[in-house]
Length: 267
Ligand code: PLP
View 1 (tube, protein in one colour):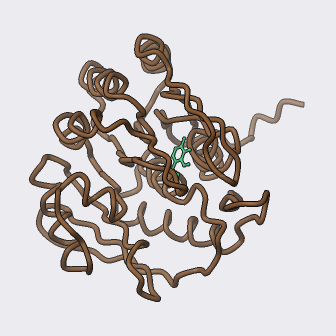
View 2: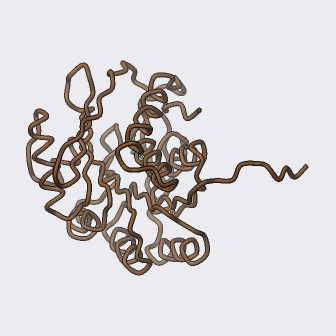
């Protein structure tokens, strides 16, 4: 019954994010991705959302003290190599997360600066943006904004790859060690994400998959990168492997429900 040769997870990731009752994004996407890619996933939930493929109908933020209690419970006991951050919801919860990253000296932090759901519902209150800029971007080993998020964080307007590079430089100046600006919102046939490491740019391109079922893409990419980093993979190959995982997850995405179905978490 107990097989001693059963493979063990090769790294530990704590995801701090919102719950998606529909199962496609948020904490649910994160834990599926982290597990499938061979790491151990723990979670601290910033907010509950009631949602399905048609959209978000309700948001219930976790009380800040209880978010703190979840993070303390995990980090005081379970070995965690990488912290992945998604939906933060409120400025109070964003402050708590920043405090805990400092208190536990977490060095490898992957920040997905989630701001809104695909249907437009805000997942980050306006007042939390300044906490992201002042405290969480500077604490990040990697920040992974899409174009609207990069625009909100930098104040730039981005219409092409030169604009993406400028935003990446700006976020690096704001304190992020590495920046991956995701190009999916530009209307080109090939989707190119641009990584800036403080000195040079690396491009990651993949063909655009035409589907409406892309729910969970951003969460899945950031979690896949976090899972590979937790196993000691260098950043460029962690991103490359994560992109392959996400591109396949979009290609075989699931037409569930009446709205935007989830990407397909599988190996
Ligand atoms: N986190 C939560 C809890 C969400 O509900 C969503 C989207 O609805 C996201 C993050 C962002 O999702 P995506 O990965 O599609 O950008």
